[in-house]
Amino acid sequence: MCGQEQQRSDLARRDILAELCARFPGEVGEAAAPRPGRAWATVSREVLRPVTEFLLGCGPGAYLSTITAVDTGEEFQAIYHFWVAGTELNLRVRLDRREPAVPSIMDLHPGANFYEREIHDLMGIEVTGRGKLERLAVPDDWPEGHYPLRKDWPGLPGGESA
Amino acid sequence: MTKYNLPVGPQHPALKEPASFWFKVEGEVIVDVDIRLGYNHRGIEKACESRNYIQCLYLLERICGICSHAHTTAFAQGVEEILGLEIPARAKYIRVIIAELERIHSHLLWLGVAGHEIGFDTLFMYAWRDRETVLDILELISGNRVNYAMNTIGGVRRDIDQAKREQILGMLDPLAERVKFYTDLVTSEPTCLARLENVAPVPADKAVALGTVGPTARASGIKVDVRRDDPYAAYAEIPFEVITSERGDLLGRAIVRLGEIGESVKIIKYALQNLPEGPLTVKAPRKVAAGEAVSRVEAPRGEDIHYVRADGSDHPERVKVRAPTLANLFAVGESMKGAYVADIPIVIASIDPCFSCTDRMIELVQSRTGTSSVMTWEELREYGIRWYGHGHRS
Image (cartoon, helix red, strand yellow):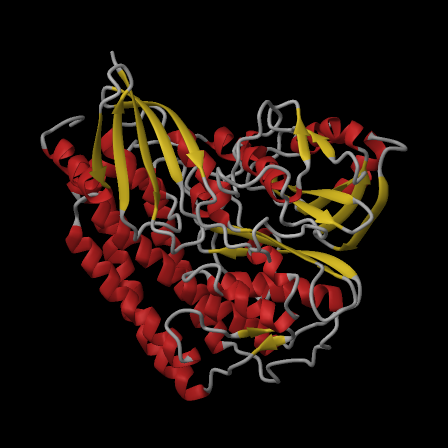
């Protein structure tokens, strides 16, 4: 496990991607570090929670910057942007368009609350295991099943659209 | 004791993140908080998908009237990373100068708002008068007091010539003196201490777990600053201190912001005196090859993060923005548990959210009888000042 003895001010940049690959052999795909301070990796949603737990344990200051939801046309992606040990680790979870769902990590990191609600409101990605997803970004009277950031969103009934 | 629900907001739909807070109160003490956002979600991310990169830059500049340069810097850096563009050294320095002027502008604005919320309007007027110095400098450089439009993909759009540099350097020293005065004032003046000291503290572990950023995190002893931790533009070459406080309370946030103004003045002076010669831009292609990048900037309120995904056309496939207020709002809500109703205005203002200049309706609903009364934000502010004026918690 990662050392907890680090001071919060410690800036030692570790090879967090290598540590992640070593800790979860065979589970981490598309690992890339295009430049210092940036790393990318893809994991399945089945290991998202243990990976999150591992990353947040890597230094006392580790946190989730945000979650980006992407619609590539073929699939959805949820990208979890973690700031951990001097690297922005972008953890991609690929999701089938027919069943876009990720497990909640809110119990591991309360700061994920708003970001999970946001990817549900705008991209229609279900977040399981955290109870009802209260609306955050869209109005209370926004029609069900309308996810404006999806590429195939037809606009609101009645004409208003992007 | 009877519990009340106390809704605060939503309010004036002019800003990025208007918010509604639902407080559950027992007597004067807040026992629970719920936050609702999105009243003015403008769909900027979606709108970017149907605009070219330059148009996106101008749209993203308008996410916020104060940290407009932070957003365009974050976006431009992301696009430049996908393109593999290295912008000229002079452009990097000018980006830093504008960013630090923007930080001083934002922090002085905050100081004034904080003064106003605690009934110290003299501080408000002083701080905003001194803020004019920074706005004058920004106007001198860019022609605009806000929304400076300095960034473009591949560099910056305007130079700072020798005459302007000398003029600006002459304006900075008096400003640094004023900031020393404010620091002494905030840490010794009885009104400031009564309203800021030990109010709604966020301990360090909670600040991390709730994902706080910027001065809000640094005031809880978390030494996190994108400029130092993940240097961009010219920050790796410019000496400066990351200001922190172990206090965690509102006074800590004031001390951190004031300290940061002093550091910003130093950074600007260094950058002006060491401005590299050379061009302002490198040519950027109109179309961006497929790729993606994550760009981070230390905005005045904390980490501003942009995700940009390009598909080879002249407009982005996806732009994602997370402004710092979203990261800090949740923590401020949690920190209010145990605080007093009279503290609501200053605690919300303490993270410097983007909705301080608005008129809000406060509805007090008594849960047992269903009766309700309505107060405006102004009345709630006056209530808080009166409540402390009558010697509560003294």
